[in-house]
Length: 193
Length: 193
Image 1 (cartoon, one colour):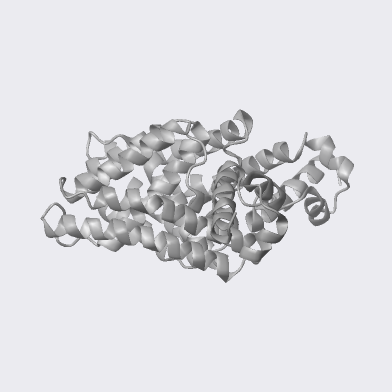
Image 2 (cartoon, chains in turn yellow, blue):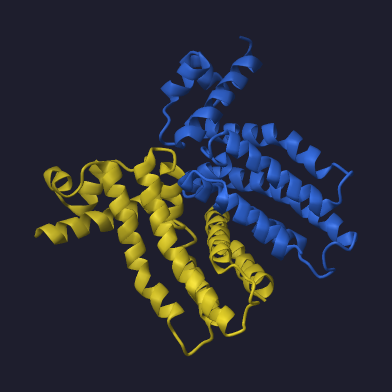
């Protein structure tokens, strides 16, 4: 494999493995084995395991970005309808995955938030990019009169993502879509209506 | 130390250590060292590390229970005011702790949800006990006419705790109380108003 392919193979394996058990649960040996890559290549591309995990987090977010942009940019539907459809599609993805894994950013955020500024700033930045997309969609809804003029779109977007992250954790614990259904009903039936 | 004291010393050390780094980050050696307890005592009280972590989760919840009951049972204030004061007091506790650690149930939930039915059922049960307390407070508010008669108090309580857990994770990442302030404004200024 060439450099870029090796790096991608490592990131993909890391994403799968971290989602199965978390950051500390997974050793670099398991990652090398899953990616079929020698140890030297790992340290050619990444400083250490933490540096690797932050690259995996970014890779995970970027894998998700096209479907986020497609859902929120689909102008066939009004903005709030797009946002609801976005979360409904995610819910169906999690259903297909047996309600396991949840959100890798949430998992890494829990484990790495108290290990110095580098991991927490990197993860906060990814959450920030996600939140900005949601806030822009809320602003569009507000401009169209779907939401009240005084609504703080940034604060509301942050709150919605926090509730989503919490609901994903309950989904994993209960192995059930009920927490995500509750999220959809409260956010779109009450908070934004 | 007698049996009960030893068990408590282990649980207290486990609670502190898991909050610093997570379940897989902390080895049993570190727990024994912090608690000043020999290895044999650990296995006298607990089957293995996972069994221990679930006992720590219960201990953590029970440590929190008196302040939860005191806040929500304080009939000087109407029910929604009690609930707001409860989360405001937690926010001050986290501020004093430098916005580190967050919620141990959330951290263990992220790490242990996909490791078989035992840990996820044990953690879901603790979250359920917490949720019931919040739901009862919402029901009391509904009966007094502070909330609309059609409100689903169980679903709303679950949603509020999910949003709280997500906000705590952002608090840890940002080392800031802003996510908790946003939570308070959206929940009490919009969702329940």
